[in-house]
Amino acid sequence: MLFFDFSIIKGIEKNTQSLTIVHFLLNFGYKLFSLYFPLFLIANNLSIHQVGYVYLLIYLSISFFSSIVGYLNHKINPAFLAFWGILGYGIYSLAMILVSPQEGLIGLVLFYFFQIVLGFSAALFFVSSRGIIMGFSSQKPSRSFGWFYSAPFYANALAPAVGAFLIWQFNFTGVFVVSMIIHVINAFFCLFKLLKPAQLLVDIGFNFSDFKESFSSSFNVIKEKKTFYPFLLSLLMILLIGFYRAFFALFLKQGLGWEENLILVFITVSSILFVPLSFLIVKELGKQSINRSIFNGSLLIGLSTILIGLIIPILGFFTTLIINSGEMIGRLVIDSSKSGLIYKKLKDFPEEGGVIDTVSSSLSIALGALMSGFLISLIGFNLSFIIIGLFAIFFIILFSFSKSFDY
Image (tube, rainbow, N blue to C red; front, side, top):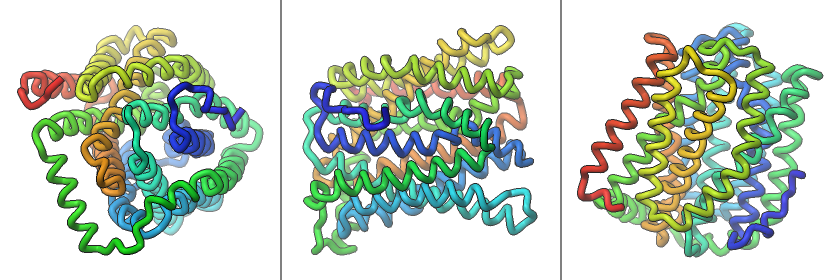
């Protein structure tokens, strides 16, 4: 049931509820094919490096356009901007039907161009939606963002199986068509639910000088040691998330030699099992300090990554499932806590907070995907997992000795 009634969850704010549903539908439409997208790229004769370039283009575009969208959020209702962002996802799905990277240089250039279109659309949605959450008061910001960031995991529980069926029956054309339809429906649902409450955040008299001044004030807050250290640690962990996002499906195929049907089952089972776990995690996020959550989430990601690299020769379906669950828990905790930290420190600058949150995450994912692509090409998946995991543990230990990292 796509329109799940999130109001049954005790303590979730009305606007967060609506945004979580919108985020769920956005991810459902996108994840019909996105989890198989690296496999789709390889099937279209793109190399590992080029897979990294695709993700780099998407997330660099998010970073580049986020500041512009942040300024527009002051002048234009952010729900309206989110509406156009969601429609952009639908346009992207249509473009993936019409454009092929195998159709010579023009086809490849157009294919890369639409990755930029996707990045722009994502900037419209994520800056605006984060700004909406930050623009409304919340006593437990990590929990609010926990619901928001858990939405992709709920989508993961359904979308891969539905997408696989559509691909099996109608090839990728069928799945892109259904994705486009879902995004169009979701765009209007977003407009209906959020246009009126988000209108309160618009400041018509806001100008570019005000924007520069508020951004300067925002960065001064972020640069404070007790804010900067946990913020930086979360960004370093999101570098690892970029590695998983771009290459984990390829690791299952090329590193472990799994068939695509088994990859489908794995992704579906892991996502379904994670749904009840995510409810418990979000509940705990309201109890722990933000810095403690960032530390614990980082530790889970680092240890899970090292463990996968160490035992690749004996990894089976269930061992991979258990270890990857640790990384998924860590990812949810890091994403939610970083946004909660920014909300807590920049609640007087919600639009700027949305931009900083979006830019920092997208840049980290872009760099993580790019560096991982080169690393895997040089030393393979086995050593890459170990080195990346050790990188995480090194910085966790380094920050744990810092007096500025207050638990």
